[in-house]
Length: 200
Image (cartoon, rainbow, N blue to C red; front, side, top):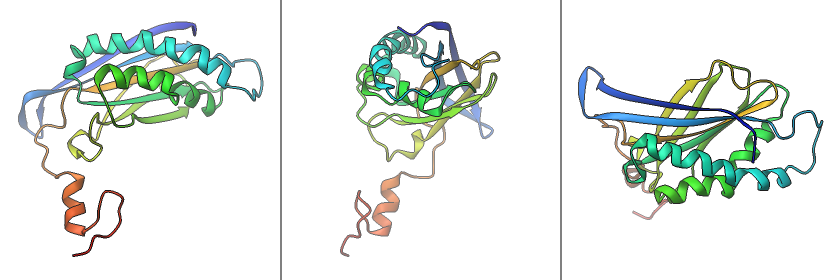
């Protein structure tokens, strides 16, 4: 398993949005793991898959139950996403490798009964950079109410030879959602879910 230096929990609850009480309140939360980059100090590594297979599943085993606890249970989670930030001595490919594998993503997706893909960001940056996790509804990517972003930072991470890996959850969509869903536009424009024009 990857060497984990620290685990960080983040949770925010919005009580008033747009000057109007959010009822129920709008809650999003995240768990981040600060891990040693397993390819640190090795120069350019052609085979990333070996260490991905060795580590990604175990990382999911640690992070997913922690997020479910923070959210109050799997059934409460409606939106989800993931992110990774590699330190300046690593490659963006290193960050991508740890989150873009079903051995990691499916741990979360299956735990919450999700069917859509996990929205994501991956980048290279230094300590204190914003950890930005985009999210969407776990069952339907067309629900714009759940196009959400949770953002936080860890003052001392990622170090140059570390990776921050994070997963996020939303317990609802935005309060006072009123821009409609993607399907409204599709119907008005006469296109199907693939974007092809429909005959009038």
